[in-house]
Amino acid sequence: MTKNRHIRIANTKPLASMRTRERTTPPLTAVFLAAFVATSCSKSQAQPEHAVPAVKEPATVVPTKVDTLDVPADGKQFKPPVHPEQIPAGAWYCDMGLVHWAQLKEGNHQCPLCKMELKQKK
Image 1 (spheres, rainbow, N blue to C red):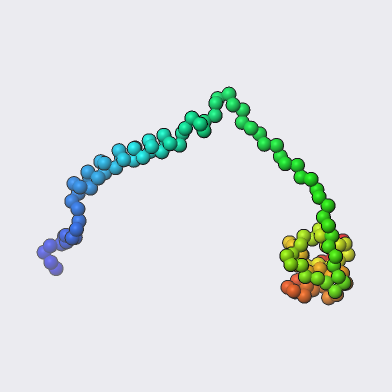
Image 2 (cartoon, rainbow, N blue to C red):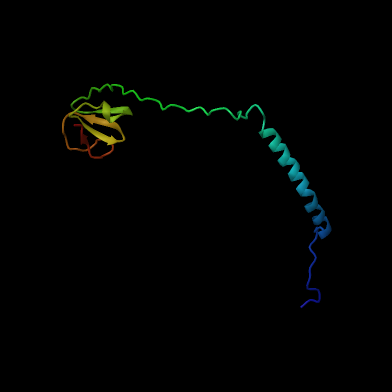
């Protein structure tokens, strides 16, 4: 064993310099905090005390008629996919949220594109 158990690490600063740094940090923080508060609170953004907040009225939804698409008996791929409401009644379609395949004949109940089961529009 060595006689010196404490090893001095090179380039270490004495404790006194660390204490002075701690003393200078809070005033700098206070300066930055004061600058932030001064710039974020301006009179142009503040509302007068007597002002009534504006209330937005809900938008009214007007239902629109959806045009049905022409679907051949053998089927058709839709690029881009369409909404199920656009498929005519009685057609078989692949419902993945949007429709990418539809056909009028019953067939084997399987989408030729993705192999999912086809649903019949009622």
